[in-house]
Length: 591
Image (cartoon, rainbow, N blue to C red; front, side, top):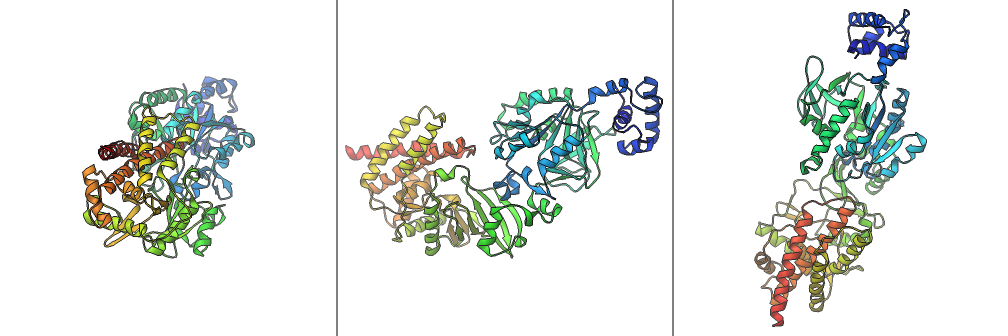
């Protein structure tokens, strides 16, 4: 095995045989004396000839250090770069005149690394052209939407050897790749770090002995990693051992490495400031490329500018919003005013009538129920609203909150406003269930039995229902904005003519935590009087029906690659429990 100094001399001279010792020392970051000693030992071994050129024997000694290939991780959705990442993966952003991933591929090729695999997931079709235009291989990560990037690395496990692991969203001001690498390493930079970056603890030989996300340190992990064959085998084995542990799903591969850093010999490859850039936000991007915002091809920015009568230069402080189960949202500022841009989520075009939503939003604004709404495109579904600072969600345990919310629902239902659109929770649930069956989604074993029971309850509800009224149809805690004495009802995606009891059904089924008794106790707050026996059973049936609809909706979101977490179980329980309670009341009446 070559010493580190011998390796650095051979690697430099095989690229250019006329390099001086001083040039080699500068490139390798080692002393001139170390280079001179290594060069002499290489001549003694026959690895360099009398004129300092690498001999065939020297080439053979270097062969085990040759990089086999590169794997570029490009499967993530880059939600922190919203809203532009709604339109394209950030690897496809053009920065300083070059598409990020294309520049990365060119740099790898210039370093003599021709075997390149791009692991894709989110908007994967955007990358397919690279296969023909850049002669790379495309590998689809099957679990990109439900796991973090360790799943992408694991998907590439069969091709890992002497391999560069690259992030598709980074930019290197100079070509930092090499045809030969001495040992496993992480790129390490001393630039200012973001709070989420990994701080590296190094020993005197630059071996990494600790990795802490968000920790303090002089060096931070940023840039490509390099695995040799032995490291690849060991690390993939560790990922395989932990893959089925639920706690692993959200981990980056860096997190798994950090957990086992004492078991694995990996070193830091140091870079001076200004060489390696990673773009975790649009602020990072625009700071690096001041013309990025002005030049980027984005209909979203065009929508914002046309709606708010502003220029792209007026848009600032863009941040993603981690809220909502259906859509993707971004917060931004224009001329000192804060706004929300709502982008329709994947698959929503099949289950949401955007024209109905746009109509209802206008009504809600006129009734004073939602003064945040500015504009929605009824064809594409994007929407711009005002952002209200200092708001909290409705508290189901606060009687005043509950009373005010139900009063707003009553005001909507009795407004006399008539929409040209209607929404029936049972019919819409059946439609989504048919979609799931067509795509062979694995429905639970009790699915048909529950659907049959809900169908029977829905038939009874239809028989005793009055005239349809305009309903919100997603009338639950997170869609109320509370600020002091103010309360707003937002997110009117499902609003249309329907059964007003279904708004009460939404209010209860979607996370209230109410028992049947508690649900019956809030009905006077809606009706302004004691509820009749018919109203009581009708509302309990509505909770079961609405819970069933959202339960099916949640499975559809899962099928579309957008899991909703515990909500699926919350809605399932509401469907089961309240359907049973309503059945008991209907049976009691029948006796």
